[in-house]
Amino acid sequence: MLRTVEPHIKSYGSAYANWASLLLEEICGSFEIVITGAEAEEKRKELEKNYIPNKIILGGQQGTLPLLQDKFIGETRIFVCENKTCQLPVSDTKETIKQILYRNDEFISKNNKNED
Image (cartoon, rainbow, N blue to C red; front, side, top):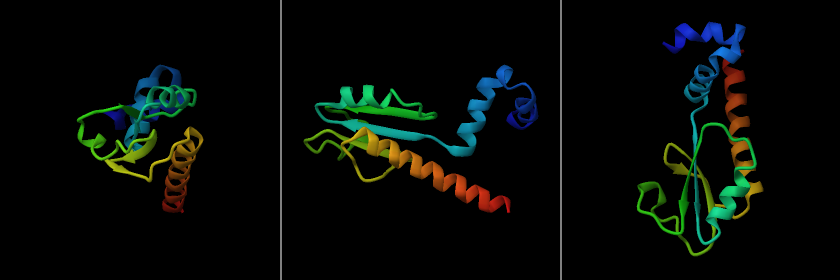
């Protein structure tokens, strides 16, 4: 279905916003952002001030979801993950954004090489 709609997205994007979001998800994937520790809610609010498409944020001070296992290490930490594989934890939201931007830059570079 997405292949049928994709050519129309370029010509009349506003009518196909949900389809464009789905296309972005298919092409780029999504991030799982895990925030753990006493300041998890404050860090989440800080992070939410930035536009980060295709993300899932989870965490808190405790949790039993598989992605949260071994992430509660005493202090507030933020893990940027893809496909349940996480980068090294950081404590600052600016560093979190850097990790995401670095990953996006890698993705763009890789795909630009594939087009050549």
